[in-house]
Length: 154
Image (cartoon, rainbow, N blue to C red):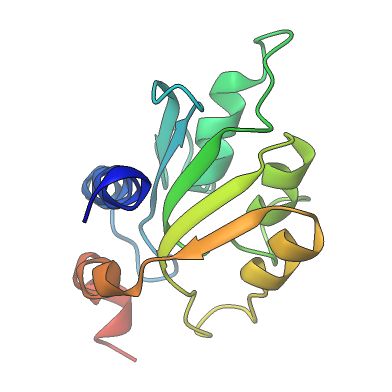
């Protein structure tokens, strides 16, 4: 593996490691997110519950970019351990919509959101919104392990 595929895997593994910082709770997944610019620089990171128990990883990372004027995110990539959500009970905007609203053109993730809490259509929503979406399923087992507190009791 070389080039972009290797970089995608490395950044996604980084997001999965970041998710381990999330405090586990029985009613949510733990997720990590890394926003990387087209030059390979990390622009922001976030994990579930980092700033508030109700905040999702992508939401946290994007909020760290909100104050940066003139930042073009069209060639940036969001690496998220779990498929970005399309249903939020606790917030007005789901993560897939936040990603599209920020103008991010690419999303890479490892595991599609299991239908335990909501019917997620993150991949479809992002693609319909014009984003490129890449699923690296060989890393899904790592995300399942990190989320055993939820997945193993169902």
